[in-house]
Image 1 (tube, rainbow, N blue to C red):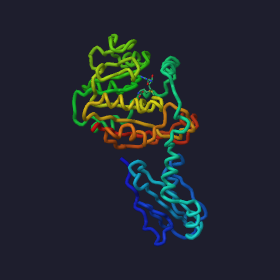
Image 2: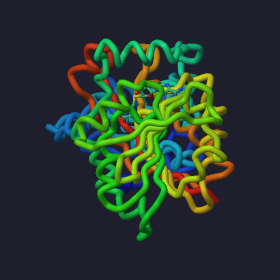
Image 3: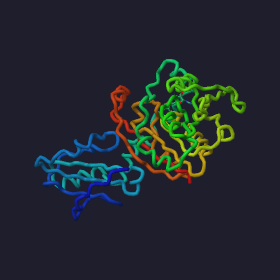
Amino acid sequence: MQASPSPCPPPPPDSCFRCPQRVTCGTRGGDSVASFWLPLLAGRRRRREETAAPDRGEKRWELQARAGTATSSYPWFFSLILAGSSQGELKGELKRCSWTMENVLDISAREEGEDSGSQRNRVLTEEEWLTKWELRNIGFHNGQGHPCLKKYLDIFLNGRNGLRIFFPLCGKAVEMKWLADMGHHIIGVEISEIAVKEFFTEQNLSYSEETVPEIPGAKLFKSSSGNISLYCCSFYDLTSTVAGKFDAVWDRGSFVAINPCDRERYANLMLSLMNVGCCCLLVTVSYDPNKHKGPPFYVPDSEVKKFFGQCCDIKQLEKIDCFQERHRTWGLDYFWEVLYILQLK
Ligand SMILES: C[S@@+](CC[C@H](N)C(=O)[O-])C[C@H]1O[C@@H](n2cnc3c(N)ncnc32)[C@H](O)[C@@H]1O
């Protein structure tokens, strides 16, 4: 859940901000302002400690701007810390910059790459994915499993047993074994046979292999216990006639892996595979899409809403700073995972 806002100090009586919703401005220890910066704006966000640096007696202004009507879309805060000049200069500075709430939203949207930047037209072929598996270029695989699935398991399962749980673009995700061991039925789809076979081998599961008459070239790999079925074919070939409908979906490394131009197609197919009341945990990633070509592809919050919002109730559960050294080597300076829960209406 998003942290609640820290209480804002009362606004000065003659606040210069056009403040449609909830922009509050207050003094911290004086009236001089020399510079300002936006440490928490998306893409430039630094760790909270930096922005919350103790006031060392210098004159400091802090503006906390909460994105009003877009709070649910951008549920974080932007802090402006201004130090060293007068209140009048501050006003002038802010006016000069046309610093209105609309600007805040506009900048946050751009910084968040709402337009997906240069990734918009990027296409990865299925052959390229197969090659990744052949060359062991599979840094996306997390042998430990995703902590959020454990953390939100109760919400995900909602007390239900024996669910049909879908893993789109499953790779060899270890979470499939976790959930199968809890008595659920796992259905996955993965283009790479290497990945599917490695899953069963690494999990010490014997399996059988059969063709899928409805999908030319597809194979179905089934664990001997019968509770894990992995289709080796393209996700886009799957239908509810072939695979049935699902009660729950774990979408990690899937919506972010498909080509950005295929998102609508993906979402429509996914929705057609979901049973009434189906619950989907969706993990997206957020970073500057102009600095890394993907995959994983940056998925703006707006696109989750655009493609799933009509049929699903959507709630953002968590936004996690996952920045690692490998992200730095990609040229990034921040990398977030965003966890949503989608509930078919
Ligand atoms: C980023 S990986 C994520 C794997 C898995 N979800 C995980 O969390 O480890 C994406 C996977 O999708 C597979 N893939 C790519 N395009 C596919 C498609 N059209 N249909 C099925 N699988 C696909 C790739 O082979 C790859 O294993």
